[in-house]
Each structure stands twice: as C-alpha cells, then as structure tokens.
Image (cartoon, rainbow, N blue to C red):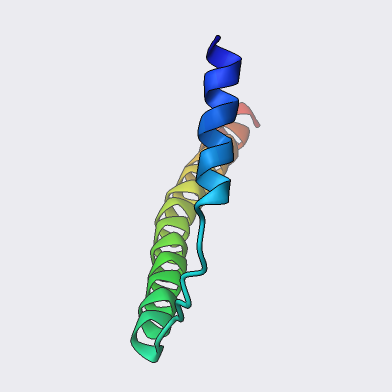
Length: 73
C-alpha cells in the first residue's frame, strides 16, 4: 500500500513539473563568491590559531627535553 502510494505521488509530481526559466543574477553570484571567500578566510584563521598552539606545545616539549638532558650530564 505504501509503495503504491509513494509511486503515485512521485508520478503525479513528475507529470505536473514545469520549466522554471530561472537565472542567477550578478548579485546572487557575488553573494555566493563572498560566502566562499568568507569560508576560506575563516578556515585559514582557525588553522593559524591552532597552528600557533601546536608550535607552542612542541617548543615547550623540546625545551623540557633539553633541560632534562642537561641535568643528567
């Protein structure tokens, strides 16, 4: 019962579909471009933030190893 109802719904939908004659105007294109560039800028800012935290962690890790190496000699 459900399969036939679903099939009938899709059949009616595709029979009654018509062309939309839509287009993307320059304003919409610039908004899409702005959203893409904003996403890239946000991703780069996030990566640089975590990259600096990672570098700080690695520097602290190696400074501890150098200090412990001088104490053992």
